[in-house]
Length: 145
Image 1 (cartoon, rainbow, N blue to C red):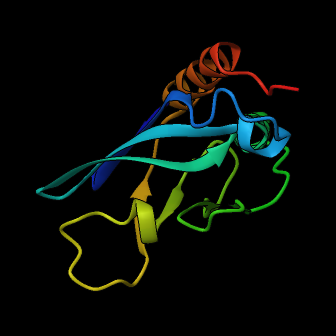
Image 2: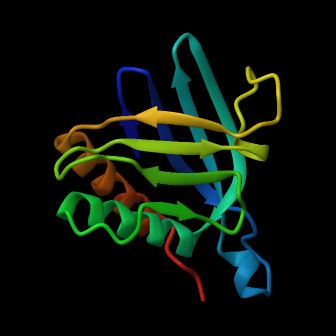
């Protein structure tokens, strides 16, 4: 899933399940994800286990609600607070997101440990592409019983 804008870009890709053979439901559904960010002249790539399968489903639902103009809520947070999303648009069809990156997702060029909010402003076509990409990724890595 990729979202861009004039100030930066954000890409999220599922690499694998973190625990393939765990007897525990919760552990079997944690994902290893790759985060690629760009902000001004700073590029950053990070691999971390910060999202679960059901949180990816929630992200997909949230993004679909933005595309449909039926926003579920303006902020989306997860169990691991390293990543979060905020919709800060001022009108329908205007997609402005602030992506919170902290702790395990914080860019290495950031000198302090204060969360960084990456602004991205995809157009409708790019948002639709990101949604389709998330759907494909979730088909490869669905919630496991």
